[in-house]
Amino acid sequence: MLEVFSSLFVGMAIAGVAAVLIGMADIRPAFKFAAFVTAGLWTMMMIVIAALGGFAPGTTGPVPAVALAIVFLLTVGMLAWLGSPAFRRAFRSVPLSGLVGIHAFRVIGISFVILHTAGLLSNPFASYAGWGDLITAVAAIALAFAVAGGSLPRKSLIAWNIFGALDLLVALTLGILSAPGTPFRVFTEFPGITIMGALPWVVAPTILVPVFLLTHLEIAARMRGEASAQAVTTPMKDTRPKAA
Image 1 (cartoon, one colour):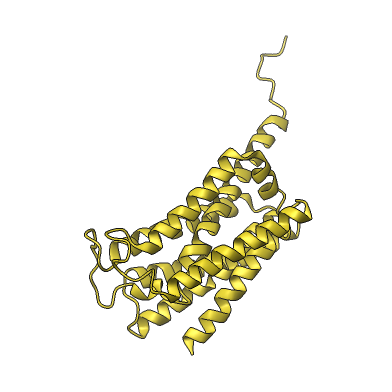
Image 2 (cartoon, one colour):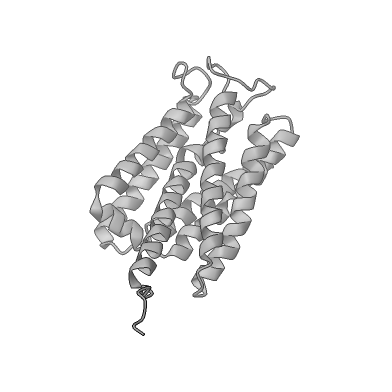
């Protein structure tokens, strides 16, 4: 039952994230179509590889195959964000409320806690990733509504953005240190995190995690831009002594 629910929710999450990041971007229809096709092909490739056992422990030597997929997609996204002004403009055209709101899909983290309770996923990864994602998701809903309503809770948004990004980075680190079949495994509690390389859960780290990290980067850039703009537009006080 959990597998069926997770499959449906993961599918909804991917569709929702794509609808916001691609559908709401101010780009030409042809580019949107190409972006949707590319996202679909990557998703299908991850599903096929997982179905064929390509993410099983040891398939790519000492480095987990899931980690390789994450690093690849994140690297491509970072290079595009840093090196392509057109990509940054497209990303920048997505409403801030949308960038924050898609993190509501991180409620899927509750399934990690359930998997641990069922004896299918080990700590510390299960609890940290599960509760961290859940907290991020709940806060994202409130912040997205606030931003969409015209207010910008700047300090809260910055704090949430830092927490959400660190949650993903620490979860990735714990996952790598818990991966069976690697020489650098530290956390050896049975059964490990092997299930994260199986369908449908493998879609979360290989697709959603890199995308969420990129949105955290974009949100941070916008917050920094907002601060710079305010510093430029705020009139400086005249501290010169007045003539007697």
